[in-house]
Length: 323
Image 1 (cartoon, helix red, strand yellow):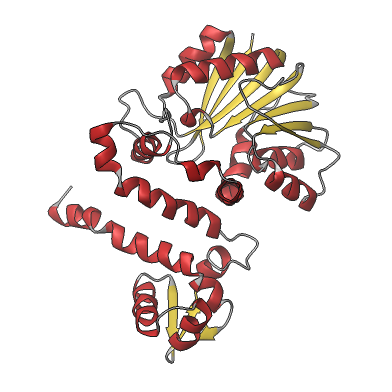
Image 2 (cartoon, rainbow, N blue to C red; image 1 turned 135 degrees about the vertical axis):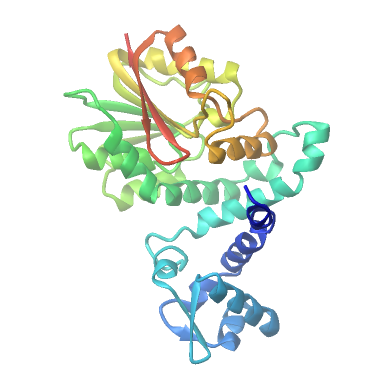
């Protein structure tokens, strides 16, 4: 780490916020597939012309936009991921990251006073819908990669997706394994229902709305998925949830846990350590956990044949078998 690296890190918020504000204004969607003047973009975004021009120029400098003869256009990357009209847009995911900005803004106070629990807005229908869409957009690339790494039991017929959210992993599993049927359980199911219909999987994927700790999960599943859920809860809650999943699996059934796993020092990868800090502010008791901690819980609950599989630099897949 040099002084230059230090200053780059300290000023990193500027480029991040420029991107998130542009997404909040709908700027990339306003440009679309054409080339537009600053005045046109400002009008479409219902924003100040001078401010929008300055933002547009900054985005060109960041190589998020292109400039040609005084008009601004989306880059190929922008057309694919930032234009809301694109089927692979991540506009809701960027909305969620902008929401986390407030978590970072209030972090110093939270570190002095302690956790304040889930914000009231997170329980509203509007927030839950956008959150689910954000999770699905995050899974455009992640879900297929993760499912490809899953060693699903041979001859498997039924799987359980716990806290499946928008159903991204269930959809990816169903598309990769045509004989599989699945049950998705979550407190919010309307987004998953729409996405399942879009993928024409209504006959193979069932939705059940309920609390993870009280709803009947069912029994006899060949496999279960717990993706991006352990970081919402404390150790006691997670062990209770994993025990319930264990009971729902058949003997030799497999559990696949997808998480921001940490190493034994709880410091690496940095993405997982930073995410853990966000969960301190965003949730009532959640954080990132070490591979070995989760593996210990699973062994004590009756799981064995544990396998670690890295998916990205920060995210991993932990496979466990009910023995």
